[in-house]
Image (cartoon, rainbow, N blue to C red; front, top):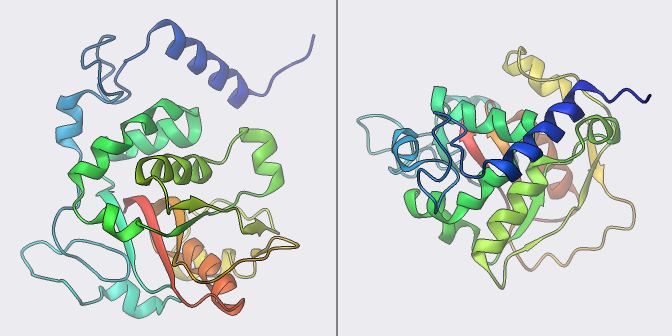
Length: 248
């Protein structure tokens, strides 16, 4: 008998659960069809700390009690990123982290069916992405084999589907090194961990007429997104921006 890795077993059980009991809220685990139009129930969606106000022009981090539009936060000033600007849907509190965890580690792709509702709650994101080339942050082939999917590619495709014509998804990058997880690393260690970890895919040919937006699930220090941006900028793409679901 073939033994399936634990992660794949969890994904299989999750897919079966979605088929048998569609509509279970991944945050409060409310009953099926509590809010039939959304995967996340409306009560929990109201609890998500959506970024609605102005923030850091480079990462989108909101600054409480301050009109911060056009300025940069301390983290971005210290990091001096290659990308031009960035946006996120929400700040990563307990509720938002649950969403990311379900998507990233359990493969609950159905969460992204709520993308139109998320875009409605985060003013300016549609305008930020409109007419861009969305480039997902790649996973190393070993990680893809063990996990079975790249959540950043899923996010990019969900965004593109809502944006419609003029916004496309291109997998321009590859991950050359299977880097350790960034979760427990500080800012400087994160930057060193992903240095030279990415490259253009062999045979990549890109017409640089459109702005490029790198897509990831979370923005913490921005080290991963900036490492990817550096590759694109060095290849001659001037207008590189970043987007992540959560900031924290």
